[in-house]
Image 1 (cartoon, rainbow, N blue to C red):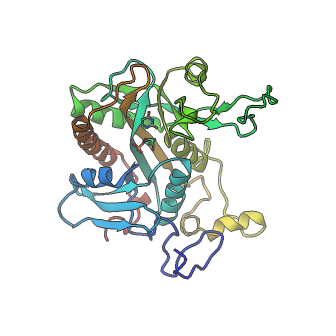
Image 2 (cartoon, helix red, strand yellow):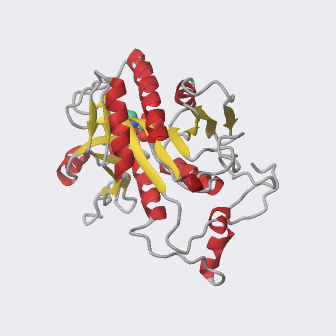
Image 3 (tube, rainbow, N blue to C red):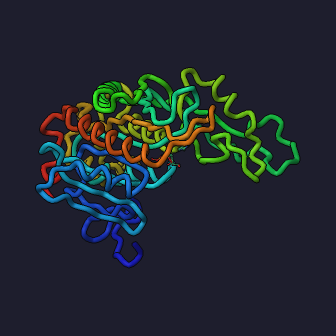
Length: 330
Ligand code: R1P
Ligand code: URA
C-alpha cells in the first residue's frame, strides 16, 4: 500500500519485491493454483492441504488471500481474488510476475445456469465469451443510439484442452452422483445484474439479453464474471503457435526485459512458459427455473469440488525445469 516505498511506477513493487495488490513475492505462490472468489471458500478448500509443512497464508490489504501449501506433497496455492474482470486481471498479472515457469490456474466459482441443468451441477466449459455493457448505448432513455446494442458479446477465449479434460475427469469421479457437464460455453459478464439479464430498478435495457445470448452463442450454458478474462489473458500470454521470441535490448519493446520472469528464461526458441487455464463452475442459480442452491449443498459442493480441483492440479505434468525452485518452500 501507500505506506510502502514503491520503486517502479510501471510494475510497482515494494522494496522487498512484493507485488503491489496481492502482496506476494517470489516463492510465496506455487505454479499450480486454484482461484476462488471468497476467503471462506479458500479456507474451506485449504482444509484438504497436507498438514506439514504448515501452509503459508497472506491476506493483502486489497482483500486478496493467498494460501500456499502442499497437496499430496505437491506445492499448490489457493488464491481468493474477489469478483469481476479487474480482480482477475490483478491476480493473473501479479502472480505471473512472482513465478518462473508454467502457471497452471483452475478457477472454481459459482455461476448461473442457462439450460435445464439442476442447481448443484458442475460445468467445465471449453470456452468463454465476454458480455459487456456498451457504454455508447443511450441508457438514459433518449433512444438516439439506435445503431448501438446495449450489450456486446465477444469472440470466445478457450480453456486449455488437456487441463480441462483432467479437471472434468477428476470432478466426475469425485462428485458422483452430482452431474458434471463438460464441453459447453460460458459467458462472463461485467455485472451480476445488468449484463446477466437481471431486472433491477436501473434502466438496463436487458429484458431480451438472455434470449439474445442463447441465440448468438452456440452451447452457451453458464453465466458468471471472471472465466473469460482468465482464458483470454492465458491465451494472449502464451500466444498462438509459438514464434521465436527474442528478448529486446532497446526501443519500446525493451520494457519487456525489465520483467524478472522474462529476464531469467531463455525465450529465444519459443520457450515462454505457458499460462494454462481451466474453469469449474458450480451452478448456484438456475436462470430458467429461478431455483437457488441451499446453503448445506453449497458446503458439500465447494468442499468436494475443491478437493477434485486440487487433485487435477497435481495430476498436470509440468516439466521439472519449469517449476520455480522456491515454490511452496515458504
Ligand atoms: C457473483 O455472485 C460472483 O459469483 C461468481 C461470479 O463469477 C461472481 O464472482 O463466482 P464466485 O463464486 O467465484 O465469486
Ligand atoms: N454468479 C453469477 O455471476 N451469476 C449467478 O447467477 C450466480 C453466481
